[in-house]
Length: 184
Image (cartoon, one colour):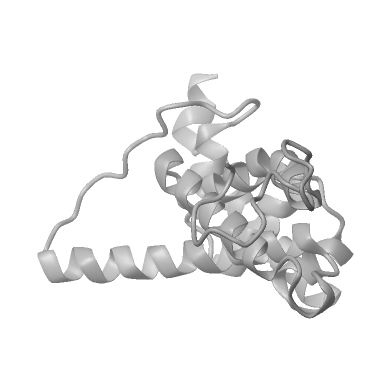
């Protein structure tokens, strides 16, 4: 079973008595899971938390799958859930650190995602939430502005602003300092 939660009348792997047959949601979940984990990881920086967030998003997508005629854009909807859950977890983590008085280093991911540049994604995680989300969707998943707008629930022009400001902030953050340039 791909998702945990309440057991539906029909199992996730069943289609009207066809034991073992794939459902549309199973295919969707298999196709999108890794991309959802990667998107969450780029925003939060902890692979374990990213996997939890992706699983939560798949569960929420499964719950909404057949409701009210189904989801028009399930991939976009799942990514929007990921973005919102990451924001929720980051806020909760901030409140917990404040309450406990703990200031700790974030753990590095235990498993590398392919073609990941840790310095770049660490810099992305320092951006404001919407800029980080837009950058991650654009560069990690190679999504066009229109799709990012659907996922984030904003206008394409707003996505362009987030991308522009995010790129500018990343260029400043990742630019070599004059001391580093002198060593080259």
